[in-house]
Image 1 (cartoon, rainbow over the protein chains, first blue to last red):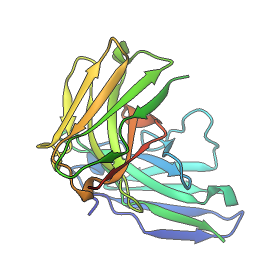
Image 2 (cartoon, chains in turn blue, purple):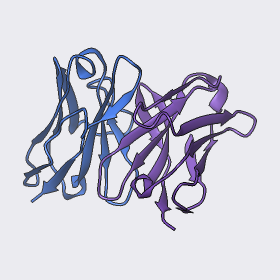
Image 3 (cartoon, chains in turn blue, cyan):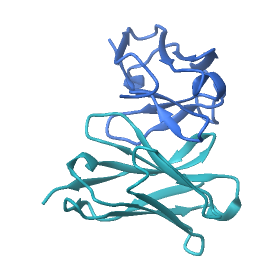
Image 4 (cartoon, each protein chain N blue to C red):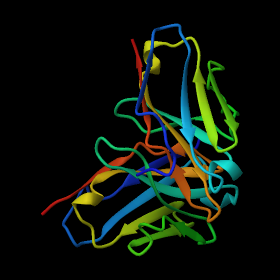
Length: 109
Length: 117
């Protein structure tokens, strides 16, 4: 049972926009930065968003992040078939422990 | 370009100790700018943080695994290691090492460890 709650799956058509939510509490998301990871089938996770809304070098601006209170959201615009993957949110808590969401499977129809 | 590579046995017997090493290349583990972490992913399931270490040897562990986990660092070899004792089938997973500074920004490719007799 993950401390952070994500929808198990989301889907949208190519070219459309999708959002993935991540819900936590005041002890984790509410007082810490959120990061997002993309895991393509059979590969290691890759950092997409850090510090709630920053993109590492090389990550296209189709990917965006936001945080409000104890929830965070990953947005993906201009969906491509190559975006089909599992997406995970992550954060920290007051005891310096890391937590990940349960993951969301994105299907591009 | 910093790269991380996990290594260790792919098969461990129940009740024994799982031992893995992560070798860091392209950068120094002693730079002090990062923590170094282990994460695992059981087949078909999500990510579980195991713990992390600073180059000085300071460690932080997942409370649910703390009694069985030891993470150590060897700065001379630019490596850090994971030991997980008293393993069961529930510890079967892909084990990843990763670099941490707020977020887990660089990951190893992962290594599958199966616990079976």
